[in-house]
Image 1 (cartoon, rainbow, N blue to C red):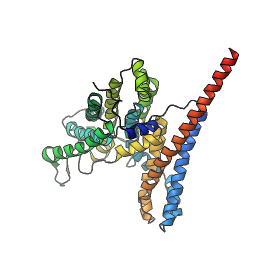
Image 2 (image 1 turned 180 degrees about the vertical axis):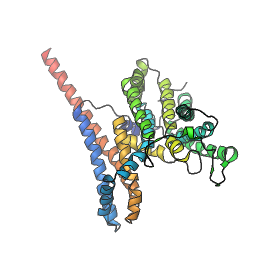
Image 3 (image 1 turned 90 degrees about the vertical axis):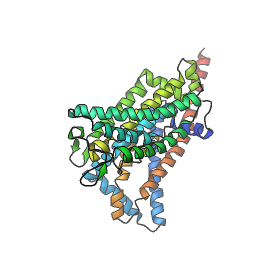
Image 4 (image 1 turned 45 degrees about the vertical axis):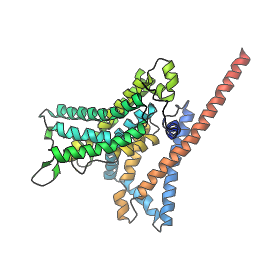
Length: 380
């Protein structure tokens, strides 16, 4: 069996220094990291304003629409609703990051989960709670199975997971389209071509009618369970130890390849839940208007949230807020693409600023340790 760390791409090795940083040592370091992330957000807003001003647009209208959204309860509900799938996708990505794996295949994994959950969910008539639970288990199972392909390729053949999961995304889309068009099209009287609609027992309730799905509770539960498993359990310790230094982990008796398999399977299972807000709360079937883009948004949210559950929730809310600006910006005759500019600059700013902060924090920690050792030698 090939050692998964021997055949790593140089670029991937460099990038993984950022996606799986060493934990902060004290509250001061945590505040430095939080401040740096906030600075990246403010920098992105400043650059966006400059871009609008240079292009002849009213930059102040951007901030006016932001304030209007913050003061509107319906827009705040929309923000939370849009953040829901991104929280789950970001947790799936973060699990891989903690194992020093870049699971860029969350997109394909959750689409596989949505599709097969839609198909299998119509085969049963069950009580509502049981029916919804079954659909969630099916989505997790198929998401996990799709992620398992990349995991097996990595531990047996040393195939880089970034390449494998990108190719699996494309394969998933084509496989789903083939199965949908040839086997599972259900043409209703309205000519709305989808899979067979789910029965009413498989429909998720709403917290606020027409504004906020109760699936946000599932997303928050996923983030909480991620915190318990990854940060508070023995399995989570072994996962993080393998991610930080696979060689040292093997010396300590941790099988790195088994942890790769476990991390990818768990990441894929969580990814499978990402699209169920769409399936159980909006469309009640799989169709051409499938939910797309959450896998890649999850990568951005996980990076901005520093792979911590609280950071992920806050970052997803920020991205949900930015997405809710699209409509109001178009009304104000401001290109909605400025939202993409803001997101991109936030990511670049976070990567650059936090990399600098990591170096300074590590240096300060090393200086403190050296000073303590010097005091101990004098005392001895």
